Image (cartoon, rainbow, N blue to C red; front, side):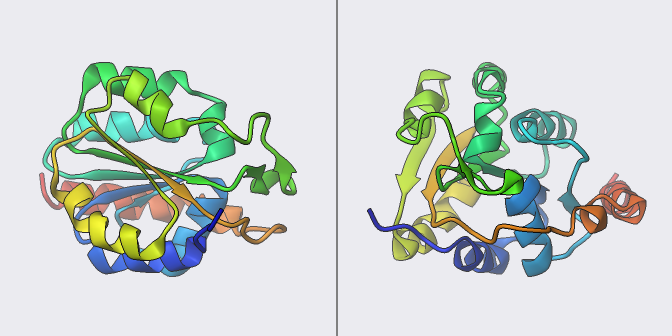
Length: 190
């Protein structure tokens, strides 16, 4: 199976992100920080498994902005019930990307429990009206503008190669100054 490079995916995403709130979780969040450090990024200490929940809260609180979640497959497995809640609440401004590489990168690259889990199928069963699974970078780039524009909730499983294992800049992600910058950016619209 062909797998995309996460950094390449994130660089494409960066070209399309403007006013959206981006929720980054663990390894994907660390890579997003390196690719696109901006005030409207949201990172949370101990967020493994809570990307969907944090994204839902932001989507409900700020319905005028698209909320884009950058999650990992291992993280999502820790809180599949979050997808059911999102499906029930049905926020139109919610777009969830899960980066599926079948490992817990944040914990040394250990394999996830069920490497063949059908995340798109789970999202469909949770009543997401729009779902997709993508393993081709050209297809991702072609479909991304529509995902960002359409009413959600939308769920996209991105099949990627395992990324960097090792120390990540989590302390940089979780600095208080980032939370203050996010709050100020959001309050500027209020």
